[in-house]
Image (cartoon, rainbow, N blue to C red; front, side, top):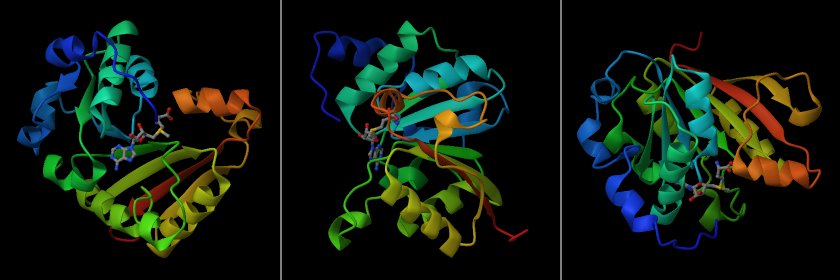
Length: 217
Ligand SMILES: C[S@@+](CC[C@H](N)C(=O)[O-])C[C@H]1O[C@@H](n2cnc3c(N)ncnc32)[C@H](O)[C@@H]1O
């Protein structure tokens, strides 16, 4: 994602109420941060933040965290939360998903959204960066505890097929697969920035839900 620095970037990073600094200090304490016991849903690679900002308004009974690894993109996401007047049930965290277990305790996250994750090349050097690589699925299992679920959307068929195989090999159950989300009966879809772009170009959007259950039930 190519992002230019804007003249408001530093001010937003200094003052924006949606940004969580030192997220490691909230490990095991995210309920205190939100001030309630509501479930926490995490978007990994939230980009410019439209999805989590809108989801927070539509779902006041869920807490949302948008995770993003690039500072400039984080500044866009927190600004978007402000502009859309997102709820106090959303926050943005600057962190690479490689360090998920540094900021979340086992059982703290109930659902992960992977929206238009970078597909990366399927060459050995790059494939391990895919957010559905088994390395990452192990991390997700650790922060889910007994159960958890991933809702995934992508425009990239090869990444989609790779992800189905990765979930299946770990024994996760895949449900509600769509090969053309926007021409399906699915209701309540919240569009992301990338989704708006790709769907506008007439590309099909692939979607699935993958369910993890430690006991294999
Ligand atoms: C293609 S963009 C999609 C953004 C947004 N989800 C959307 O659908 O519009 C992927 C985003 O994921 C972020 N990202 C990629 N790998 C990541 C990682 N390991 N940890 C955190 N963020 C990551 C990128 O910086 C980028 O902003």
